[in-house]
Length: 397
Ligand SMILES: C[S@@+](CC[C@H](N)C(=O)[O-])C[C@H]1O[C@@H](n2cnc3c(N)ncnc32)[C@H](O)[C@@H]1O
Image 1 (tube, helix red, strand yellow):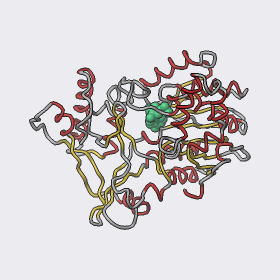
Image 2 (cartoon, rainbow, N blue to C red):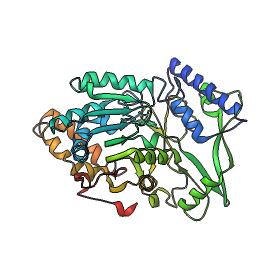
Image 3 (cartoon, protein in one colour):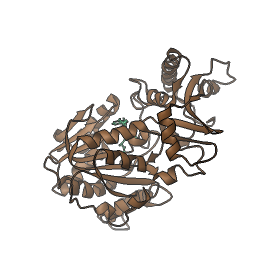
Image 4 (cartoon, rainbow, N blue to C red):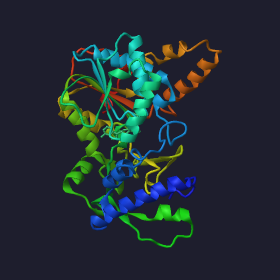
């Protein structure tokens, strides 16, 4: 249990209490248990209360975690090279960004595409959190006012997409299903309410009230897990049918162009490695990574790594071609991130030294360079793929 987490402020604690009561009510009205995917959905997206829909700072240095576009505009500048190549293969020249966070990627990408003379006709953001949508609007007005009129927001996928689809750290935030194989039996992890035991400290209240509650897995999930998990032994991991459905849905709507899915994760053989017996579920609270999804609901991000083989298969089901798969470092280098870094100033200058430290985080194998992957799923043929020229690991999927 995550007992060493810093205490939230009273208002944040009260917010977490309201979400806890909301999830508890959902558990009680479902007969004492909800699937973990439902718990994660409520904890992240319950209207007005969930982590992504309840007004906390979340991303950035003052929040709980920092994503690549939050860290440095050089990420968007490099990505622009690949996005421009995709847009060149389309007639509509539209960018569709899923889950745009603070809006920094949108603002910096629009500015970078303008310098390539490759502005999209329209930049569409699909955002499920009204709170983040307001923040994105404000970021775009502030960082890229000259391009803000090109941006529109939608709350469901458009019927047709002929352009570049971008999802950075979105698939990991989609509620996953937790499955356990114990003594040969498949069970689905769920969440129950432990009752209001009298806690010794206030902090105990927060971490002890939800409890794991497992039931026999439904046969479709058990069949999927049996195909993916290692063949023997007790094992727990995730599958993410909702993320796969989203990728397939996006693919079916694409009439041209390509999608770039960027996230932390592995090809299947690594994801379900025999030694990874506890899965990949991870939580973030004030820049601390921990493993307890019941700690401070509404104040804690909950994620699972992405099984990129599953995402590639979902794209193929929609008729897309798996056009490239690589780690973040070779992708960004292939897209010219080092040239962009060189353009920030002389190597002794303060802007260069600051930018170099950020690029180091993006590229270092021990930071984001290796764990983060980029998967390209294409509808159009003949797209140039600078991001996959250096290293293409499609054979590992
Ligand atoms: C970890 S944040 C990443 C934000 C941003 N892309 C970045 O890199 O900074 C996850 C984002 O995915 C969004 N999201 C979650 N489920 C989604 C879905 N089904 N469709 C679109 N966006 C979704 C969240 O609201 C949030 O904006």
